[in-house]
Length: 296
Ligand SMILES: [Zn+2]
Image (cartoon, rainbow, N blue to C red):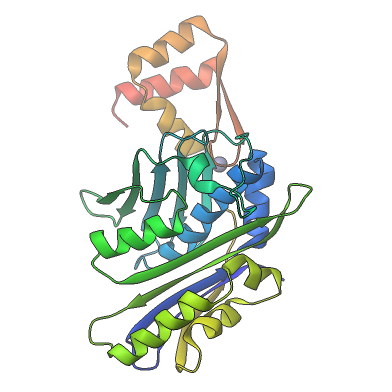
């Protein structure tokens, strides 16, 4: 079954939720970037979170970037989503050594590191993008986002993210949820959800045992009646184009461009997100330089 995402609320609108299964999406990312297990888990959790957060955006021109950099061996992890929940991303060091916690789980926090920030950038088509930033709490990403929502967006939120890796290094199960409590929700409902969150299975256990996004929400919200607003397929999608890569090349400036033209036969650029290679020969670079000069 293809990965998909659910977005909805409780019938009275007081609880907002997102849930998804991202096993295939994370496996695609792992293969593309040749991630070792801890890197696959870190990148996979980030992609899963960005997919859900992307669907919070209003316009299909909006985009959301999530970055975490804790100066750990994994280096920076950067992921981007649009409002359809399709995502792309990269991890600075995909070959980070596997470190396990005493519980036997992959130590994502250790790989990401603790000395840095989690940053959320929303490009909403305004002059300046929205930027929210918090110091890293645990590097496990779910906890960090929970604190981000509480501090930067003032919304009590619970974020659960999980990636389970097979012994052969492939992705066995991945998924996540975001539960948000809007103002005015009664204490009994909040207590009931907190009770469930504290006692339920981990997200990887749920997805590994076959739970769907509907099943994940049912396990958290129990008997609370819900209304599903959106159900959509999601995937790892890169939207790079030759024009976009050209713009990146032009943005290095006229002098650097001239330098490449004079000293090299051409230029080759690789998209960070999908590893697609773009080659430009000398004539194309000269044409680009002319356009850069004329300010087009
Ligand atoms: Zn690309």
